[in-house]
Structures are given as C-alpha cells and as structure tokens.
Image (tube, one colour):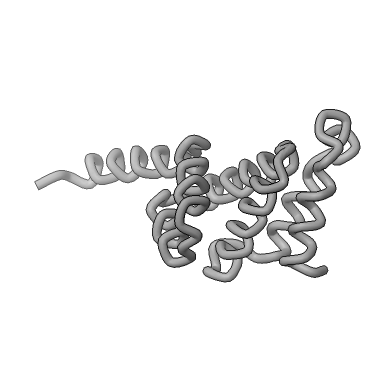
Length: 129
C-alpha cells in the first residue's frame, strides 16, 4: 500500500501533466471537428484533453491565436464555430472568448494578417457583446 508521501508525489506529477498544454492535441481536436462537425464528439474530445485551469486558458489562447493569424476564411469559420460549440457546452464563456481576444495587440496582428478582423467578426456574430 502506497504511503501518503507517494500519493503526494503521484498527485504532483498528475498536476504537472495536466498543466502541460499541448497545441498539437488541440489542433487534432479541431481537425476532428472539421471532419465531422459533431458537437457531442467535440465536447468529448475536448474533455479528454483533461486540461487544468491554466491549460484550458492556454488552449483557448491557442485557438484564438490560430484564428487571428489564419488567412483562410474556411479555417477562421471552423475555429469560430468550434469556440461557439465549446461555449455552448460550458467549457468557456463568451466573455472569456472576448477577453482572450483583447489580450492580443490587434494592430500588431494586422501587420502580418490583415484578415484578422474577419475572425473577430465571426466571433462577434456568435458572441454578441
């Protein structure tokens, strides 16, 4: 039978694992959603990422960053739809999405991607302020 010190060590390792944000896994979930547009499967896949609060925030940041820096309309629409479904399933709030967008220096993003405002429009359509 493990002693309390071993349990604490195992719990600490688990917390580190959950804090580790893996963009490739988030991208894979987005790819699956692009293929099937299944809201329930998206919620299940997102839940299986087993994100901590910090990891969840980083994942949201990654999705927003990808949408802002993407030059393809179809991909921006997909990411906005994905965020819409994640908000509906309770993973995020619409305010959290808007707050995440606000963390970006949009003037700077526009230099590299003048189409970033299109992604913001798609988000505003889904999450009116």
